Length: 504
Image (tube, rainbow, N blue to C red):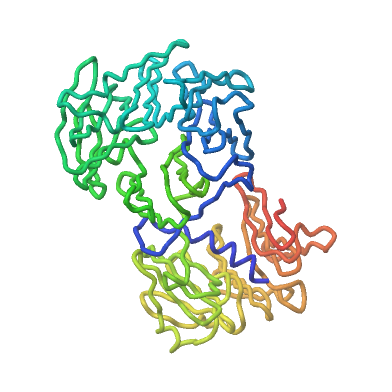
């Protein structure tokens, strides 16, 4: 009976956005088992219609959120090793592979093979400029690097730009779309900007590298610090400062030298996702602000950064049966193992003082009342917590699996396992004995609808309560048997969940 409830209560672990070591995020993995061409993903792009395009070392795939459509050389790609997938201002999709480019026409690609000196190329990078000119950097080896420019089915060799004014040559090149300029890392340690046929040296550094973010911004790592190109100048990024320019243009990042975590930056939050899914090549954020991570072992979707998973590694007890938020925003965890813990925003602490009042196991269905009191359900009572003090609720003398307070009149419902449902209203109490293990089943959940009815789910059926009248649905008509939860939606429709599934 408890397993479904434990899964349900795990949803409550949507904690505050805090940086806490050991917590993990819910991640969906996509590999060839799910239909992806190959697990080594090189690039991800989202087109204007919302499709995700994934480039792998063995073809590319279009993903609609449910399934993959795969393309290979037999579908028009020049070769299967995809470097980048791009979309120009007209909406055309281009696949850049090691040996050429291909434009999507209907359900096939039209290839354009790039041959230089009779041997295969190794296109390492590609980007559109603001005028739909496609630039490609062929980094086959140090002696045979090429900078190629493609537009209107015409290819130009612009490799002269790789010879820098200081006598060095380009070892890395990226294009910054907002600034409409190339950023070049020279062999002599200099970083150069190239725009409108002019070179401008930013500086010379002992240790430097450049990379391109998911939205075509250029980031430079210079002597261990990160810089973002902003209006033709590099601005130092301080990810723990709210005013940093890092927050707005780039929400997510990872340290290429340390692939065991991903840093999340979102305005006033600074988080780290522990990473144990292999080598990261890069990250991508789609239009819905969903984070995608790709690399050596597949494509990974971070389902929500709103949810953190707390486990025994964080100090959480096992067999948690109740999760309650207190009036001070602290989260309480009550366990069948007779443990009570509280999350204070930084760590999970054990609470022992309740043992002097009632040292027994905790059940599901605990809640916080409107006046701030917390009612913890237990194996023989209800434990009340208020202002740092524990006490037993005097009118409860049995095991309880649900406490509910009415939003209509603040009456309190206490679902005892064997002695019926206590309804405490206006200072008086009554017991509906049919709500018990020996009759119609004990109460597992309650909800109130706009017409004034209380929908009560029990361990065997469903009931409607209105004032002093109770109607139990017979088994052939019961919306759910072996039920655990009920909620009423904004239209006043009750939804029931249990072992048999979800019903309305």
